[in-house]
Image 1 (tube, helix red, strand yellow):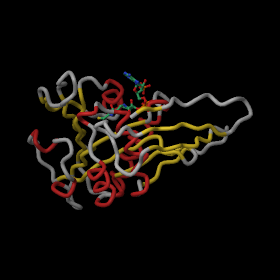
Image 2: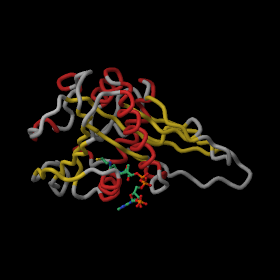
Image 3: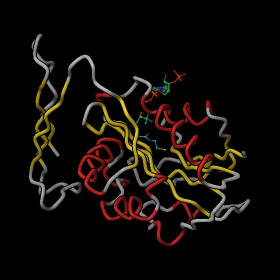
Length: 219
Ligand SMILES: CC(C)(COP(=O)(O)OP(=O)(O)OC[C@H]1O[C@@H](n2cnc3c(N)ncnc32)[C@H](O)[C@@H]1OP(=O)(O)O)[C@@H](O)C(=O)NCCC(=O)NCCS
């Protein structure tokens, strides 16, 4: 995917444009969307809001996903659509004005003390593992558009999902898997009280075959 970088708008201009081309030869190519023009509102009084994801957010979610992870570990559009359909309360997006700049998604699992490494397989379908009465929240992914990172949005989304899951679901623990290389994510999880419980060697099929850390928080 070739991305024409966002331009800083001239003073007095409230909108600017970014054009995203979908390369048909890329692993990230999405059929039916050859290119996308996005109009960004950059005015002063933009509202930041967090809401449940909708199916028609999928193109923006996939752009964030593709900009956040190595091509070999990007999860598929269908996997994300199933997550939105099956557990919408566990799938949040953060918007600035009307632009989706971040997402976080999750599943409800039955609690088990020792979680087999296979349960964390990327691209597993939520339909295999999600139980509406599950007591363990599995946070399956989190991403923020590159140009909006380091502004506190990742923390904000994570805190909001945690708050809603505790209020709306009968969970007793939360679990997630993170690469040893994703420092910003690890920082968010540690600050929210997550602790390492397991390491999985060479879990990620990225260029470094990175290890994964499994982290859990008991409530
Ligand atoms: C992880 C991610 C969502 C964080 O989003 P963000 O909006 O940039 O994060 P925040 O601005 O809320 O910052 C979170 C914390 O990480 C710190 N941080 C930011 N970038 C960092 C980096 N590269 N290394 C270490 N810490 C970093 C911030 O200082 C902040 O810590 P603080 O609370 O002590 O100030 C974002 O970096 C991202 O999309 N990364 C790629 C995808 C990814 O790794 N997802 C995690 C999947 S498990």
